[in-house]
Image (cartoon, rainbow, N blue to C red; front, side, top):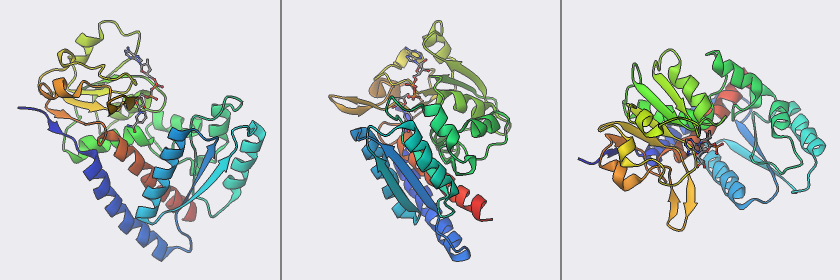
Length: 285
Ligand code: NAD
């Protein structure tokens, strides 16, 4: 029997409608509206689409969104000055700097300049440190989306062997920590480009999560029959958007499989809204 699909699109719609109720309740009980400010430097078309989608999501749940679009040649000091202003602006609860920023700007410096209480992407080093210690302020959006996709489909993690392929700071690394945390209690293996005999490691996974950015990288022989496979990859190809998993072949082996598009992506977007509401609650209490 082919794998059951983990439908992130429908789940994200459901979470947005739950959030809309919570946002309305917040607005009724406070003098402000939860507000997310996005900062976009330059005119990268993919980044423009991401920011536009994030703003549309905000509209749908009643979160106010603002955009500062700065020219490609913006200096680091100019960007830091804007972040300083947004940090002090009490009407702004969440600040998001769309990555990547142009070469003349030091990404880490910029992310660390954001007030950690307004850091709804959870990329500030203080928030990353808190996550490591098991006392997160906000959860990073993509790993949180993966956990939600598992939890809401009642796929257990306790005692399961989760193998993650890809060790980036925004997906693989934080997800490995979150899955190993008390409550999730998975046994985690984190793989990367130097991992030896990756197929045999991947085959041990009860839950296989792939985030590397290589189309159709995970083939059917890398998947244990019945395993849950979460495809985080987004690759633009001649055939449109595809993930890191060979979807048709792996579907014949896996128990559950998340599609691309329509799997993890919509949940990543919704988790930004969750964090913005959490930031508003924290800052207005
Ligand atoms: P990245 O591009 O920063 O890093 C890639 C990682 O993959 C590295 O850790 C590297 O060691 C590993 N890797 C590369 N080739 C490998 C190989 N042959 N074998 C094993 N490991 C290998 O990673 P990223 O920013 O996490 O992005 C990964 C993919 O996930 C991209 O396609 C990106 O577009 C996508 N992504 C999707 C979402 C979403 O919401 N669905 C969010 C973030 C990223």
